[in-house]
Image (cartoon, rainbow, N blue to C red; front, side, top):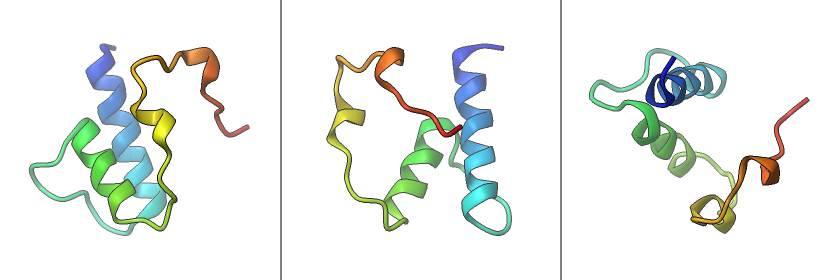
Length: 62
């Protein structure tokens, strides 16, 4: 599975977990994740935009 396919799958899974129904037409991958974050009450998180973010610095749910 390519990186883009992984992002697409994660975006769709995240949409299903946060919203009802199907994702909006025309939004895929990172654009879909952006729409979810903008439409949520999640506080801004500047480190996600850092070019220096490494996998070892990301905390994932258990």
